[in-house]
Image 1 (cartoon, rainbow, N blue to C red):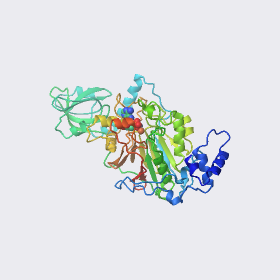
Image 2: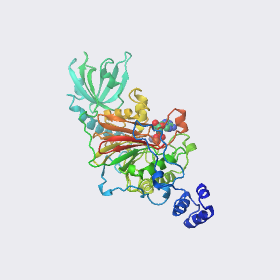
Image 3: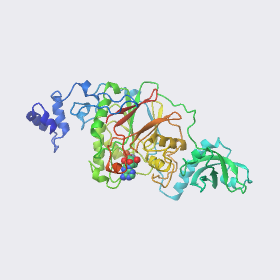
Image 4: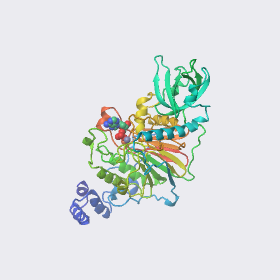
Length: 496
Ligand code: D5M
Ligand code: FE
Ligand code: ZN
């Protein structure tokens, strides 16, 4: 209505809009009107240069409160509803695009939830994580340690099966391997108590120490996590190309920030963004239904498939030649338990416009030689809840991600808040050191480097919900972290 009212000749614009609608349409949409107005030469439009966001923030240090775009301007996204948007001042040589995906478990789910599945997934986790630890200590199986002489030196590689503090503040950690369990004690004033306080159940560690006088407990001298070696040297692209890393779009929520999204998509069409050939989306494309209690009161689109249709329309605003990779999150219409398989064929069909790639959560996506571990991030809530504030907090979500890197596992703890499906193989183990670790979920922007792994939590595109207000979560919305794949330099663009 607004578009029609503002048109130079409202009556004729209306008449032509009615003419253009297909015979099977019941309503005249914004798109029909826009196509008519555009055919008129864009009466409401501005010269292309001005339709770009005025000046998104240049970098992390820049004031993020930069205004971008102006309502009502003609923009490349005005043709939504049909094909992907390809016009704009940029063009990608699609022959040069290089994507390789590892760790996709879609179609390989074997778990039935039986006891035997838990045995095999734990065995696999233990085997793969202990491999990196075995070289660092001269370990013995727990049953062999049991029969060692009192006061001897011993080492164990095991999964944390119990952890508690004693009355005097020491850490009592029970370790489990494939042969049994053995109790160990980390003294509170020892250096490694810093590691002990950051341990979670079910992660795999190595300890070295001395057996007690009665041989029944190991006093720990050194405690190792699998961790990221300091020697890790990230790979870089051999041409000038960048990737935008986003997550938590939440289309279908009343709080989805459509205007900010339009500004982002418009900006991607500009010369300034010409090098951004990849878009990685780390889950929560849509708001979903029934994810949290009372969520329906804040839904803008009630049907889950309609939400994906709507998401797909927004995605079409992004340049058609960009390479897009998507993993699901906890609001998406795939199983909640991790690893989450990729979107099924029905959802892929809805989101098919860009020929995007769909892979499981988590997955390792290598673009132009740079490996990106994409993980939605549900376990971060648990890491933040369980570990001390100074190592993991919502204000510094990237530091909570560092903890996952140290544990070499994206969701170590079973039976807690994060739902984990036992599979034959533990897809949640971080086998290879990634060059970039990309998560979302907590709706907070945070980034940093841990042993040269660029770690990014990409915030969200959803303004504060009632729930978030009630628990004082202040989301970082409408930021787009952009990584230069040749230098691994990060720039944060603000479209809010
Ligand atoms: O969750 C975004 C963030 O907010 C994540 O840290 C969980 C938290 N959150 C949001 N809504 C709820 C409810 N209702 N209960 C508990 N925690 C919540 P996301 O799942 O990405 O929307
Ligand atoms: Fe989310
Ligand atoms: Zn989420």
